[in-house]
Image (cartoon, rainbow, N blue to C red):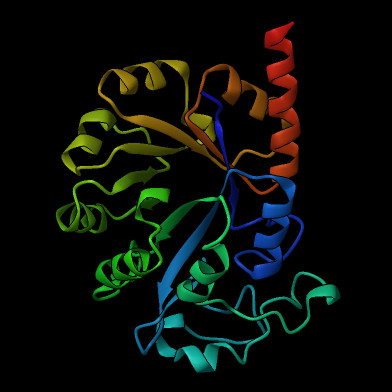
Length: 248
């Protein structure tokens, strides 16, 4: 099986992260899926945004949770990246699901609940996935184990993954206790031994964030289930090169 290539916040080295232009570039490049982040607005609307505060990637200040969705849409989420993207808007999850609905793309939604435990975010996200018939094509990931437990209790068939930047002593068993089916681990911590041990327990291993061809090639060689990259076109080119070398 090919290693799955997820565009990390879209093609986020080529367009402003977590915006429609970044997602469109990822789709056009041939990425297998898109990874994006979910925060919750003051009026309970899930939006695609990485940081809890809007300061880094918009012309606004303050926290997502203190804005209504309508207020957020007035912010410019593209000018910080390039003048080519002036007046790019923040997307709601529903807008994104509507865009992706007719596309053959996998989806990884990261619930950003490790800093702010947004009330009912799990239920709200789940209901939208049901509405757009995307449950079978979606992985829910989080650094927050409580979010994963809630999702698993809501629907044990849903694919969830534990996100970590640390290598816990018993990472595989911990992941199983959460009802998760995958481990999403920082690239410098992933190795073939972890992948093989996890596979024996029916757990998959994916890794983030992989942009260099040498790192990508290593991930393909040790059979990572999936990689997250800011440069999906580079990941695709490297995967094709890897597959050609195997055939030869």
